[in-house]
Length: 199
Length: 212
Image 1 (cartoon, one colour):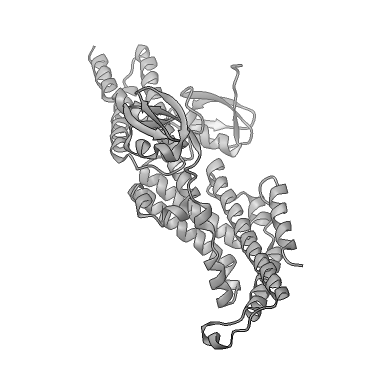
Image 2 (image 1 turned 180 degrees about the horizontal axis):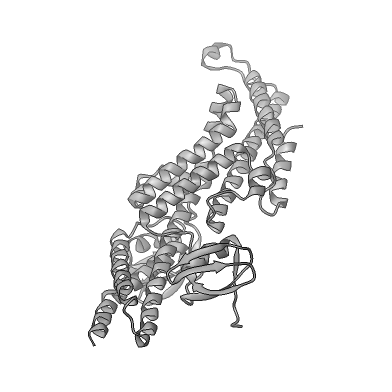
């Protein structure tokens, strides 16, 4: 039965919070089905240009089979495309949302295929290059700036960072009042949180 | 007294009209289903003004007296807000380029709407995407199968901009004799409507309408 595995692949994608682990086995099955279907169809469809003279027409049941198998093949093409493209999109999104240039460990080890890791890395280079060409970090400032400096509580030790007003030690549990532009990246990475006491 | 004079000169440099234009450009770009022509002159002008303003502010910060610190902060805040608008404009465009990539690169008209940097971005991203597909799937198929797979590439179809969708729009200049759905309308400056993008496409492109 064709196209069952492909459907599972997509359901997996839908069910997951971000992305499920790259289903190497599933892709292998899909590719195998594509090869098989292509071979069968080529065998059944009569007449390339060379055989024009000896074309025999298909019986009704053969016509139905060709249609069915052709649809299975097209569906598998779409499964393959959708699976890869959806994951590509999520990978790009990761670069934008977290601003991180390095894959988090869990994702690096469990979730992405090696090709996808290459994709992330190449996309990261591309985006960084574009940012430097326009002179702005496009991944910054999701919210309109409300104030210049904000209070942040440190969630994980960040060590000593250099700011415009000198060096600041960001140790876990402390609260500091810093320029928004300086801490934005840290907030995105989850290392500090914005202390908002205006309700 | 000298310092206050310098401040007011700096403030006048960031012309209000340009900023308003930037905000219109950003909003229109966000809401239009297709990528719009790049407003290169506007971006350049605003970038330059921002840089100048920032340089001025930086030079003042060290010498600022206590009474001036607040004013400095306000001006800095202003720069941040303008930077935010610029970032949002460029980001809206990049997102759209990514979304409609395959469609954009096959249309000269669309390609010409991109900035040089965006063109480079688009062509590299296309390469990245294709390489990824190639490495993950194509190399594992027989030659004939691979050719068939490529021929059935629906990406271009799927990445077409949805120009049939309806958008909120505002008329910037009077438009006479506008006809839609067998009705003729005159659009007055300041009118706000919901119309099908396809119908007002040309007005958005030449700036006579903007999107909300």
